Length: 279
Ligand code: PAF
Image (cartoon, rainbow, N blue to C red; front, side, top):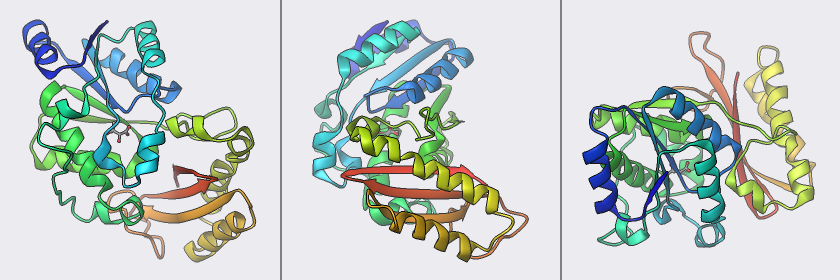
């Protein structure tokens, strides 16, 4: 496994040794868990070589303490990547990725950026778009892998790649869960043991919504979820939304020709968690 922290060396190797080979790219912010590893395994099965980037992108954090506290476990990450057979790891510095200062481009993602996370994390998707565009321009992968836990991010990246006419296939990867159902996330490491146990409530709630989806109205489902979280002292629900899987517009009633997902964002103590499910 080769590890590069500068752009010039990294690009030199990519251009010299890997032309005419399919490249699978898995962009990450490190603190790798089994969810990331499942993306990397899929990339390994579907490409000649796999490039993983580890970069905690400052411009996508709208909250400075979240950025400062984001787990950084580079040595352990590299050991896992070596073990799993990753070919190349790119671990650039902030200066390398933002030579002209930590500023995001402004994107128009057709309104996708205004829903859910966009409402609560202003500027987040401009930051994600900026860094993912830059990484994809550098790596020029055949396939790039993104988890469905960040479903809104996945749609936005698909949109960006199609608008920019980048010849890259964006591959959605299923949510990976801990034994109790909590969606895997690097942020889970920061939960107290008690909050981590109790956080299975999120998935339980999503499963209930899924089983009641055809039996109840959207209004009833919304009220039920809000009531469950309200009665729980650990959680502070930020949003629960049932939205169609293409526009992400909140549904008021069900159109049988559309597909839907339910989305949750909640604080468990200090830690913000998100999850979603197909309905
Ligand atoms: O999902 C993430 O880990 C990040 O948003 C990404 C895609 C690596 C961009 O920084």
